[in-house]
Image (cartoon, rainbow, N blue to C red):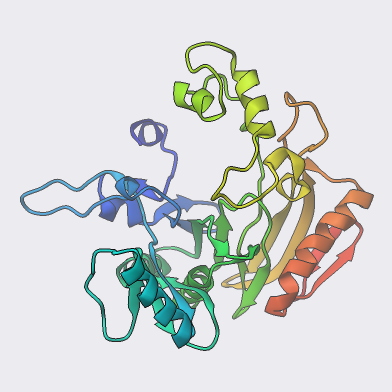
Length: 332
């Protein structure tokens, strides 16, 4: 933060306290003022910024968008959990009249089993207030959210809380919502003529060329934590087997979805979005480690495939994308 301020570089999403982390950042241009507000839903709890009090400084950290989660389950399933609680002699916990808590997880009776999420009311209110403030101070407002969370069986679909908040952000006055952190593309929704990018995937992805890693990184992958070289550690991570209790998944280097993206170009006429173009980007999945992860405009053949992916992901939102001459045009 100190160095960004010294260089007069606008930043958002972090600060010396919650008010600073949640505040809009502004950039004046020849065409008008742009506001940026950033938040994060995927973080260790100690990383979020805290409010100041008259008798205590605020805690430095990030601007949080926490979320509430629960499972909907049939009554007979919840009854089985109650029986299991007795069988395992688990310590009784306080229960609410409209839900059942088992192993620190909330269950609600219903006929459509599955995981559900919604934004934390306080964080939603605070972030929407920042958007409302920016609508009076800037010509265009961008809101970005770092969010890994997706649907349990399909991570390319954003979690429910993310969809709910993104739509509320547009309703409050944001001109664009940009999701990131998932590492792969998710769909595009157009709401009130304004875009919601649930995830644009990776733009620069060079997590295999870090010069040094801590000792516990080596230890995690069965290597001597006090010797060896970092390239061996990255090889071990790539070849590591899924551990019992973890979900089966491909490592980044083996899954194409992490190495393709789109670069959007938005054109506004005054307050209204008049054109939204998508340019296909590839990050060189098959290149050597030293070159992999740099964004390059995809050629026509590969570009058609990449644009086809974002087109399909966007269809559930009613978004139509026409592909021509290696460019995707979102129909507004």
